[in-house]
Length: 558
Image (cartoon, rainbow, N blue to C red; front, top):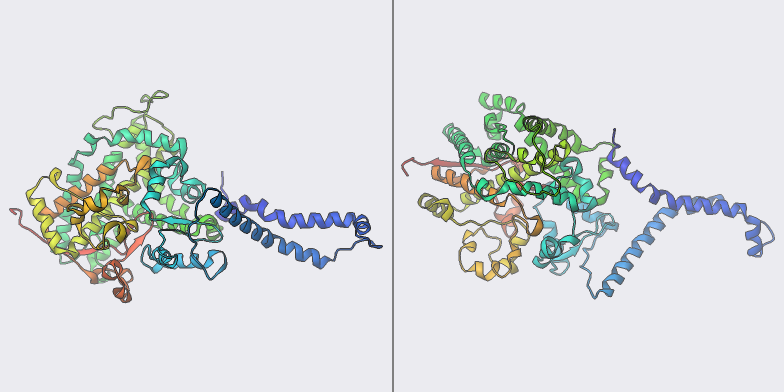
């Protein structure tokens, strides 16, 4: 069945709202014309009532905006009435010089294209008197953002059933994530969680042989490129490592993205035959095509999120995500078909049976097929889990190595710890973005890189009394099932990396010029003024143009 373009679907859904006001005016005008003599008699006029055509046209044209204004006004009145009835206070609304929050939308899109992530929210918090819970209207749609731990605790845990992803979010991302665990509510969400949970047992995620093989491959390629005299994009390397590890662990199918090789810095690409040859071959590699298509998919989905309920108007005739999903489907579908073929005829779980024992040699996809052989359900969950298993961990590795390059004293201490201790004896901690930079929650040095805050007395001062200020893996019923898998994969790679390399240096000149922070940012406070990489924030947060570094390979005897 051919689906309608997003804009046409939007008009069809809103057709009654759009048609009813002008249609109502025309119907009333027709009724008045048919009963003009009776109306004239009621009004005490001797002649039949004649409504001028210009008046009908004017009233018809005005009916839609007038009806819309009445609806907006009624909603505001109702919100204030309901808040008063509950003895509640509405969050402050960000002021806008343009009607309906058009100016705020423009500001948000400009920030997305060229600004610092989250900066517009920080500015809006200040404009509303330092509130940490605000309402910013976009095209007359009320939208809220909070960095209050108690609010987040309610959303994720204590009042979980009252907060859903909802139909607007589902509509924005369904073409990419379908009804997978990240885009479902209610019984469908419970189904996805129930069938996935048994796979992520403690025993399974503690098997490091997969990580080890791919880490050795990645670090060997890193060593070879450094010997050529070129810096390496550690984000690209980490993405390939996590892609190969995730696909083998989750789907029993290593896609060999490391086999495509590593990219050269932008200034080498046009001058080196090796770099040109790599670029030509790399474009054809399925794993590279998938990674590029999924990055563009995330970008488009993030743009939809900023445009809110009315995003289809910006993709009126063409769903821009669908063209990328063709490439992604070409990558995922063969993995799914192979798993279905090798599991054909296996017994499904009986109704009401939720958990099963997972075999040691079984992949996640093999495990899921015991619950369902519906290709759509399996495809949705495959893509959802692959997103979680690849991008987030790769980004964590990237930022960890970047921050170690920026803080050589921490790098030296961590290398010493890696060389002296077993992985199980080591301690970790890292942050997400807005809430984790609040000085009233984390102390006056909240925007500084300082891993000791998770090791010294500050843990008891800030984190222990209020654990909901640190949420890299969510919390409550939606807490990440792969949390320990991610910790193990990230820690394992960093340990192998630090056992082999020292003296990491970020090479700013290797960053493509468009991905470097503008010079004027150096005057800004906090990490905006100190970062030498530029962050892009889509569904996940990564380094624009990669993160290019050099380092020294240490003697194996060390």
